[in-house]
Length: 318
Ligand SMILES: NC(=O)c1ccc[n+]([C@@H]2O[C@H](COP(=O)([O-])OP(=O)(O)OC[C@H]3O[C@@H](n4cnc5c(N)ncnc54)[C@H](O)[C@@H]3O)[C@@H](O)[C@H]2O)c1
Image (cartoon, rainbow, N blue to C red; front, side):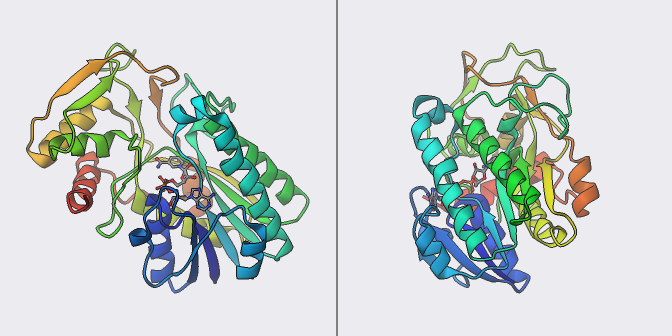
């Protein structure tokens, strides 16, 4: 297949593009390099620097058999300060992309949604039938595109899978996680262990969890990448899919810190700071539907294994 991968210079997009190339697909990698790195793009892909919202550019690059759409802004906390940026990039530009794909006859779209569409849920694990209630413009922007895709599918304009990732983690050697600003716990803790930052802030140790720190679901980026390939294939049989992508297992922030200390052998400083507003105590996925609909399995279940892969990739980048 000829596949358009937007955001292919980013963490999950580059890893998925590499897998699609390994599987024999032709990959056109579109990224404006606003946060991604050119070096992340697999050399075998045809790289185009540009905005995903540039409909003329996208139409000119087609036709495509499928599009996997990763491009976007990803920081919920920044979206609370600058919602307009998130609605521009994640909604307005994505709608332009979808229009270009529909008009160019692209039949399948796989969209990077997020667990942020659920907001603060109490019942764990979270399955796809639980109510959506975003707590940030970031989550709202993801939900807006899910709804647009729903109607495009309903009206027979294309087939789409919205994949709600929980916490993407781990790495493959060629594609380290590097966000600027970095907001994710594992790379922040690894940087503390590598002496690249002065310790780690732990936001809240008085949550109603087994050790008082927030519990999250870490899913290896290689497992995520495989789910995208499976989703492209599954859209041959399904008009619309909305699926959680998580490991199904929760780990507390303290457990992650212990895993980073064990993997790196460095006992870096941890400062307990006040809770951040909007952080739910717990967010763990039910991945039953993704297993059933895609035949997806988790191949990287060990937290220490995930941290070790992230460490190997991260220690080699500046
Ligand atoms: N990392 C996670 O844990 C996580 C969790 C849930 C959902 N997601 C979603 O997955 C997707 C990928 O996340 P990631 O961690 O790889 O992020 P990332 O920041 O590493 O990658 C995003 C890429 O998109 C590019 N980009 C941004 N705006 C663009 C535009 N208008 N046109 C073209 N390219 C543009 C950036 O340059 C970057 O390379 C995002 O949509 C994110 O919201 C990520």
